Amino acid sequence: MTSYERLLTAATGGVPDRTPVAPEVFGVAGRLNGHTIYEYIHNSRVLSESQLRLRAAAGYDIVFAFSDLSVEAEALGCELDFHDDSYPAIKNPILKDLRDIKTIQLPVPGVAGRMPVVLDAARHLRESLGNDCLVAACVMGPVSLASQLMGLENFMYLLADNPKGVEKVLDLATGVASVYGKALLKAGAHCIVVFDPAASPVVFPPPFFLKYEVPRLKKLFKTFKAAGSLISWISIAGAIHRIMPFFIKTGINIATIDYVVDVSDAYNLVKDLIALNGNIKPYSFIVDPPDLIKDSVKANLLATSGRGNYIVGSGCEVPVESAYENICALVEAVRER
Amino acid sequence: MKKETELDKLLQYIVDGDAQKSVALSEKLLSSGVSVENIIHNGLTAALQSLDSKCTNEEFNLLELMLAGRAMMAVMDKVIIKYLPQSLAESIPEKTIVIGTIKGDIHELGKHVVKMLFKANGFRIIDLGKDVSPSSFVNTAILERAGCIGVSSLITLTIPYIREIKEILHKTGVDGIKVIAGGAALQQAYPEDLNVDFIAKDAFDALHYLTKEQAQDSSDLRNQSC
Image (cartoon, rainbow over all chains, first blue to last red; front, side, top):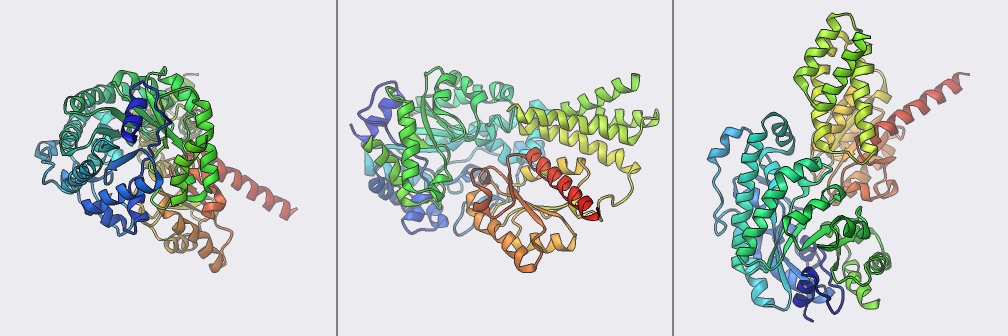
């Protein structure tokens, strides 16, 4: 099987030739290829070539057309604080007053902020890999983008003081994800991963997720599917046990689980209906020797033995300062078993 | 009996995050003769304990904590403050904490939660904001006679800066100042990785640690005077 076939088979209920490996490798690919994070997130060729080289060397089954978590916010007008060798951060939220929402327009992905950089990277990755390896693109989920636009603290207070106002901001964020996701698919991405770290139950209680996030995720994934996305994928880091049963309602194929979520527990929570990707501890990629990473992978392979729908991965982004040998250890562990 | 019921109501308003009702009821209780200490102990502190047990039951979420914190701070700032002596904790190093988000990071929400919780528990908080250099933490802690530095970060790239804090404290000859760390990325590490005294799982965990340390210090002092 090719990487593409392997991952799609696992995601859609089949049994692949071996367990696929799909770690969230982003800026670390640039760094390990001798680039700064600034170069990685500004130069589409640096991004795509770094993805291609690291994947070819480490042997995993995915590449990502993804820059950083602030691309959408920047495209909407948020000013970013850029650093040479770390990801940018939003200087100030642009939606301090809900009345300003009328002044915010949906971005045109071909020209807005750094969206063209990521679109170009998606195009190049697809041209280079064809259908041999899955090209995944990522968008910010509704809760996270809404929180970025308002500032998380203000978004929380708005939820208590003006729930209808919250709906408006979430709808705007969903619109942005939809427009950007469709453009990424058109550029060549095979699928869209929705990142929504702020939708974690550690931040908002589960009834919030059910009421505000689930309907919007459903709508988003339906839109992406209609635009050609082969699989629907959600990634929310942290202890997500309490919202995992709701994932079934969103129509997703893959959920990423962090190191605090036990793999067997996770399958029970989603009634075995969704493929799971995870859950190697991100910090391990920085400090642990490769053998410890391999042990973690092998323990998961043992726990998921007989299943076709387990995908080895990191529970969250593989940190940018990770060791190369530790990324290679993921595939090596699968091959050794 | 009636006053106890009203205090229970105050506790519930705070836990529900209703700042307006919490302030109004606190004022009413004070004017009807309930002591400030009683309101703090059976209203505010009891509300904190209720949230604390939620934390340990894995029902924790930041939203409820932020809203309860906002209600609590409204009671503190609009009502209780009028009845408390000025600079209550200024001369007590164990009750003074310098907090901030370390250099290279700008995420402040977790720090705000810590700030609210500690203030409500009688600590004096010096908040240095975000992107704070290790030397600023140390200099301010010395200047403000703080007993502790609380450093926050959501990303692993900042770890080298966090490690520097203790090194600077040591070089400056003030090893007695505790350093505690918190934040999503840091929770995956061990205290020796970060060169800190403690890594808190959440704001309550940090509070328990410092309260325990304070009790230990008081006990040591008592033993010395014997």
